[in-house]
Length: 256
Ligand code: F6P
Image (cartoon, rainbow, N blue to C red; front, side):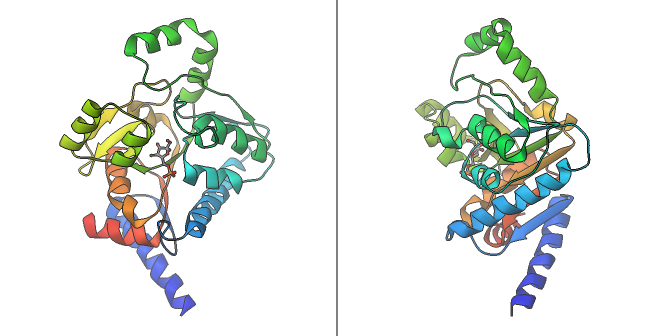
């Protein structure tokens, strides 16, 4: 029975990778919504794939997002990568400290034996304030420059409504997101199911147009409830590796 299940999963992986045109899809059995262990396994798999990418002897800059799935990856990684630098993909200090991209970058770097840089730019500052921070704060600018050179991006994916509430976006913005059909969110970018980018939080770091310069983009997210979110983000950006679970995969295939 177990062998059949594994065969089913590898069939599911190749179907999803063909349908979504993603080079590599890894699917863990189960549903992250139902069992925490599935999220941990997604994290462990992501850690393994990242370690392999870093072991080619080259210098790497890894940009990471925040969230619980990313924390599961950071918890499971180990290695000795003194040539690697880990940075947060974008600013934003809104999350619980342990789930912020800055913290994930630090934990990941320490476990990898790599170095890290932090980006201290709060969410929800006006464009003017953001521009003057970028202009006047040499420290922030130096980190943004490093982030823009990232060759690997690992990010989580969330449901637009959940993330908008979590980040305490204003009621006008939330209404606009709903009206525009936003279903998914990744690195501050809110996307509709057809891949339209509906809204982007104002912050420093990676922007959608930077993704084309990144060698490997890895998305990690599971759970049946995230299927539409995952599909929207994949359609809106580029994804080279997707690590998800069986429940999300089945649901994505129904929608795609
Ligand atoms: O807030 C950082 C972030 O990566 C978001 O971009 C994403 O929507 C969310 O976390 C995913 O979090 P989780 O893995 O906890 O669902």
